[in-house]
Image (cartoon, rainbow, N blue to C red; front, side, top):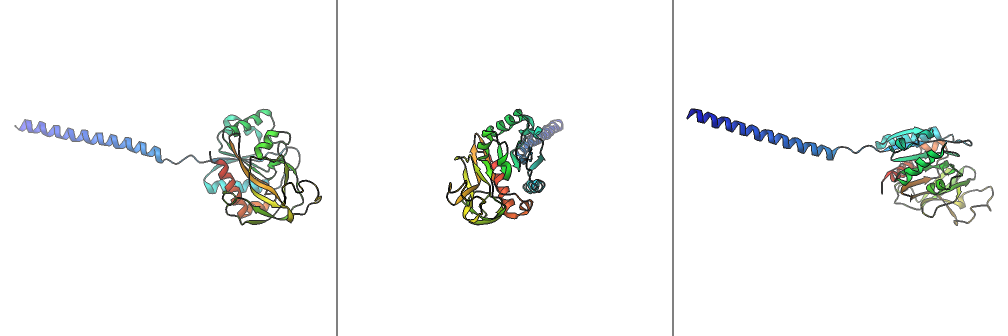
Length: 269
């Protein structure tokens, strides 16, 4: 009887151990599954690109890089700043969620292959942000104008003028007053795309033009587009003409303006 009791006791112990081991295995599987679902998303990655070809180069570029890096740090985004077009290979450029062309000007790419990589990135759903003179990049490439939404023509002298906020729901403009008093170069463009949604417009009545009877005249009445967004050939694009002076990149409203534009462009449809 004692032997049978001992056997029963051993069986009971083994059974409890088996149940315990099974429970541990199940718990480990559950924990593994849970850790996969709650793991943090990969940080967004931003390219800050500042390549200028032959011609005028803005003095604001160092300030713009510092400000954009600050916005990335604030939002937990990774970033890389460069003026080297060699970054435009399929492997390198695919790691970025948004490309920010900060005051690029004139020839922005060195080769047709680099242009094709950029074009493929946009068509693959990439985000694109263009700041100030980026609208004057690649002046011989119509596809680039369409991607930005315009092509640079001229600007009157640096001066104070009123900016009318046309969209109070976009993240790049929702915090601004209805009329934003600003001092800048008021860029004038042609090849303006009808696919864009205009967010900000310059009040031309508050601007002194050297040749007031020349373009744009009354093309858009009393206002002229300054900032817009669009979805073009699979990508998301946001452009602002504002930001000529280095001190603009210390202005709280302007930084929020850039931050909202970048955030919108990096969102997938």
